[in-house]
Length: 215
Image 1: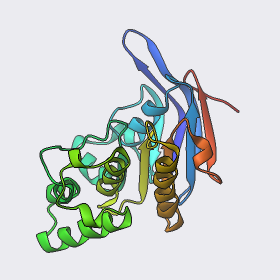
Image 2: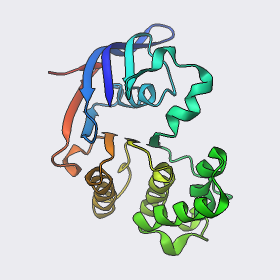
Image 3: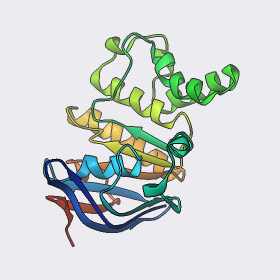
Image 4: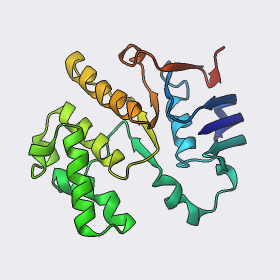
């Protein structure tokens, strides 16, 4: 599913965010990426989602080398990938339903099928009764579940999450972690960057230290 072959990422004026990373994530696997602040966790996820390109080495997703991927091919790649961002990127002037609907509208889904998918995603994360609410009316945990619903409404084969339990109380964090486990159990490949690796028992762990993968 994912292969890093001696991947590096350098930012100006010469900051090495990732150095010589090589690893494989198998299809339907759950993997936790841990490490200190600035270790390169977020950068690693951005390379997988083709939000950024590597400086050296090869990043392959589904057998496709992202280094040579044409810009026109990016939307098709990202339809297979759901991503939960650290800052959630919710649209606060739109309802819960409209936030989840947006990726399907962009992809050109028929309104009836799109509505069915949105309601199925909201039901999966426990927000079926909140579809008409604005995000500002939701708790922090509900906002995070909304971000997850939007990430999975396309039914991706790969789900990426950047610190999905940050700033949540323990009970809410455990509830959010449970949702990721449920997606993993139905065959989705899950890759999570987090400080709270203990919330994901059974997941394989990749640990970064100043951009390098620890043995």
